[in-house]
Structure formats: structure tokens, C-alpha cells
Image (cartoon, rainbow, N blue to C red; front, side, top):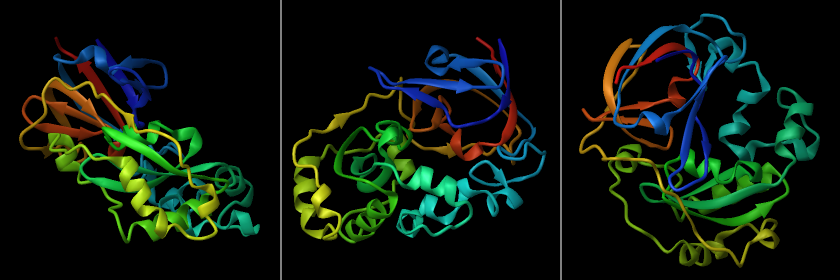
Length: 265
């Protein structure tokens, strides 16, 4: 069985365990169903997720010219505190920015390699936690726009992490934390204008990833440098495929690469 198309981040569905899907233009694959099977991945060409041209991918699946032009790659995506749509100020496309920024956002704590603070649109819960490989997460605030979420994240990351150690996450070297206690402890650092949106009463969400065995060491596969790879799939966590030889493949960081993938056994 063979699949071909441009890589995009895997779609997910909450479950016990989480279900993963690779979606191509004319086909899709439930990745859980090929656990313990040998698969071959071959890089064919680049295909920018915006213009569709065969140009080297710069960041987020876009070629360099698209990355610095399109509204969906503005600086406020990675740094939500830079959002300005609530002030009616345009960055690249005000209509797009209002659509994305002026909707409910969640400030959360997640535990993937350590406890970290993060921001996501409410519509992306729990997808964002799954993509980060978090085995537990909890909401702290629900705010009406991205700016309030961003300034809260900036304030809290002085007292808790804001990055995931992806190697630790993939090796599953994790410690369970009481995120309710963390949330209570961090409340005092929330900016005054965001404090009315604090969520007092909710519980942790626990996530179960489809992994047969975690790698002891991790070797990252970069298809631009190693255009062909064959290995036995033993797990999926975050946006990573885990293989029996300790190779790991980050599907999201390879968005915009056009590949073929064959299921060998």
C-alpha cells in the first residue's frame, strides 16, 4: 500500500489512545493502524503550503517569500502578545487577524517534559496539547482575544517554563505533576486585566498516546538531508513518528515536503 502527497501536520482525534491521521490530497491514513509495520518514506520535492511551488521550505511549511508575506505567518502567531487586532491595527491583513485574534483563547499548563505555560485558541483544545505530546494539561484562563492570552503567558513564563524538551518528551522521561496546585500558585502573577478570566473549577485532562515502546535515544530524521528512510513504526506522540531503531520523524517540522510513503508489511 502506498500513499503520496504533501506533508501537513497529522490530524488527531481524542480517544484511548489518541487516533492519528495523515491527510493527503486524494487519500488519508489512520496511522494507528500501521503500528508495528515497516514503512518507507521518500522525499520527492518541496510544495509550499501557500503558493504550491517547488521552492525550499523556510518555516511552518512555507517558502521564504510566502512566510514573510502571508497573514497566517505573522509574528503574532508565535508571540501572541504582539496581537493588535483588538486595537483595530493591521499587521498584514486586518480582516484575517480579527478573525483569528478576536476569538476565545485559552492559557493553559501542560506537562510533556516539564510543566509549561502555553496559549491556544479555545477551538484547538485539546488538539494543541496532543500536538505538544503532553500527557496531562489544565486550563488557567479563557480570555476573549489573543492579546490578553499573550500578555498572561509572558507574565507567567517568568515563574514556569514555556518550552518543551522534545527529547525528554519522546523518551517519556516524565513526572506527574499536580497541575491544579500549579495553577493556584501561579494565579498571583496573572496580569490584572486578565485576572477576571481565571478559571477556578476544572480538572486535569490526561492524554494517552499510541506508543508500543519509547526510544532510549532519539535520532531525528530530516528528509531534506536524508531523502529515503525505512523503519518499523512503534509509536506516535505529539507530531512525531517513533521507529524501532530510535529514529524519530517530526511530521509538523517537515510540512511542505511532498513525499511517498509505502507500507511494507
